[in-house]
Image 1 (cartoon, rainbow over the protein chains, first blue to last red):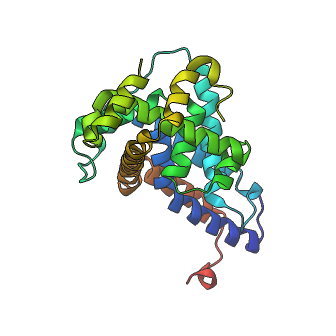
Image 2 (cartoon, rainbow over the protein chains, first blue to last red):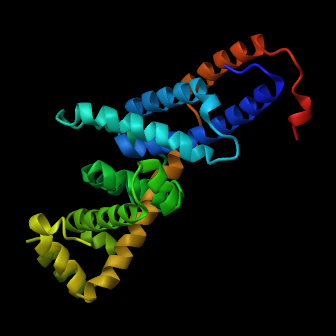
Image 3 (cartoon, chains in turn red, yellow):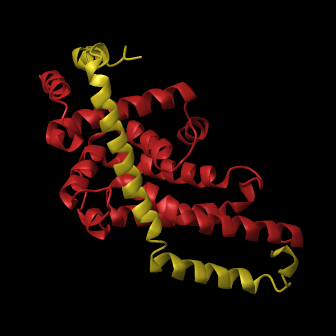
Length: 189
Length: 77
């Protein structure tokens, strides 16, 4: 641990940055795992690792990307251990959310969350990072340790798959276009 | 783009790409997916940090204070 005055100051500013990123980091963890308790464990573990390795962060580089990378890697190593276990989505996620004008109903939200949980982990993380966390394709590639083209392809496949899952379950939510509806219904066979 | 998928779900994917009528609905669905995803995410962001983190951070801050008595004012804006 560095103890000079200058490094203390920079360590403090990194700590402040970490704090500011926590709510978004937690939203990422919850969206990834669908389980509030597991997500909070992941965030705590990420926080402790980040603080323990704070010297390895280069000030001026992308702090959120550094933190999301730590959390993403923790989640993926845990996911590999758990992959044969039953989905442990505990339903508490939906309960903790307020009602939104964008969400017609809790049921619609739960359907969305279930569809999201059905995506392969690599597609889900790419979609969340690009579509909700606000990272660029380049930053997402850095976080996921893959090529930019791979991120784009994963996001596309995630969107197609979600559209497919949600179309089957609730096509009426998405508009009155009968012809398109028939096309989607046909594609399900 | 879908070479790897083609073995499993190629016919479905090709149908998606091949029928232009699908594009309009697809855009609508995509907008809706984007909205739902952001609504879910931003809701959690707006919840802030649960107590367990505030308590943990307070403890960690006390540790830092113990090892750092120098004033930190000049960096503050």
